[in-house]
Length: 230
Image (cartoon, rainbow, N blue to C red; front, top):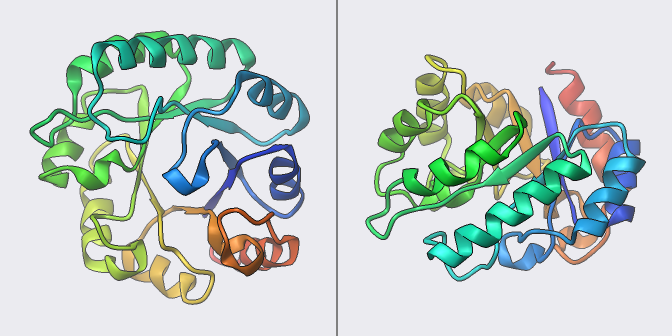
């Protein structure tokens, strides 16, 4: 069982690594669902930790439908993140009709330098997630999908999550369950859905607040609990 933890600053990154995180998702603007962090932070975190650092590539929080100049911005950010030595990228783009924007992927994926790519929670705004899953199966660079299995919190979408996990087993894709996960009941959620990776943000922070620091004891308890499932 892999545990990915959101980091928004150097303190988050160091605390997450020290208390059992297997991978970081490095972002800024956590209250907006995550935007691309500054390249200085990316460089410093990559140098400071040993666990993989996956970096968000999202130019704004208005929507996941991007204009050409937004794609240009994302392309520049991807190039800089690759140069900084990150282990992976987190991105996504949709068409106005609520489908995967394959034209955007065609522009961006060749710039990733062979790094793994997570398709982020734009997936949860798709008109048809199983159609979207089939689309993403065509792209070997995309290795996982971060999803709550729809518009509801992940803990309320057990049936839908299990269906996505089962469908993804026929491919190279991994379902990374996130958004709305809680430390309480996570073992039952994993057992019922079959997910192999989980993504935590506010649930391992003081007072479960997005803007609070990571609480070391909460993260360590979670990591230890998940280790029993591995």
